[in-house]
Amino acid sequence: MDDPYQFGQIAAANALSDIYAMGARPLFALNIVAFPREELPLDTLTEILRGGMDKANEAGIHIIGGHTIDDSEPKYGLVVTGEVAEKDLVRNDGAKIGDQLVLTKPLGTGIIATAIKQGRAPEDVVVRAVETMTELNRDAAQAALDADINAMTDVTGFGLLGHLLELCTASNVQAAVDFAALPLLPGVVDIAEQNAIPGGTRRNLDHVRRALTLEGEVSELDQLLAADAQTSGGLLIAVSLDKVHDLVDRLTEKGTPATAVIGEITGGGQPGITLRGS
Image 1 (cartoon, rainbow, N blue to C red):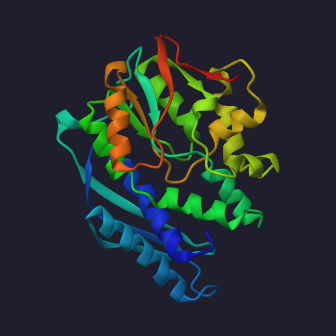
Image 2 (image 1 turned 30 degrees about the vertical axis):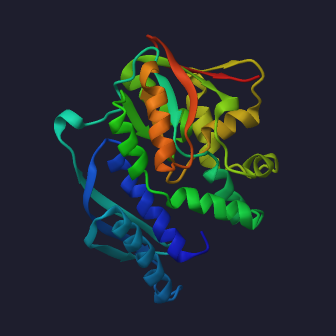
């Protein structure tokens, strides 16, 4: 991001997501900072830290310290400590055959971030992507807990397909995803068609190909969109068929960025994903 305040907000929301994805509540955080103090004004660092602090305040926690080093490229994140009762812990290994897969944020932040670097991202597209990335997964996680889900993970650097494969591997199941059901950020398809594809997205797709089956018309671009490396992405939730409507209703009530039923757990055995097109 060009805006240091937004940069700090997004980094903090991304770090907090790991806590929410396991059904926990954050307790406190530490700043981790790398900053080129001879090349950028300290006002820039002030804004980064202010963005992180405001997002931590929104989460109801304090940043109680941290560590800073001089580095050639600015880097910022949080180390977050959370707490959850053992009986309430949500993992990615509980998915069951017949479970529906629900996604709570649209995809495409990796592609849009690449377009920003290339100077090719329209302002309205950037605004929508920032809104998504700065949204905490707190409310979505609470809705999932209230709906008594079976498994959950957040969708970040490994992309939807990568994190779904992790869930399938941990749960020893197979999944199917309907590409047409995937929520995508506005403008991301047009940007992707201009070849603004990050290297991490391409590596994600290469990694999952061994376990990926294509059904129907699924283009290479479709696959890249499904594998796009996300920053501060949504939650991917596995919930039983009889509870999916309750979950969607709760997510809708919370106003989550997406409430998309994108597929289901189709069987057990060798972990794998079928990506279904038209």
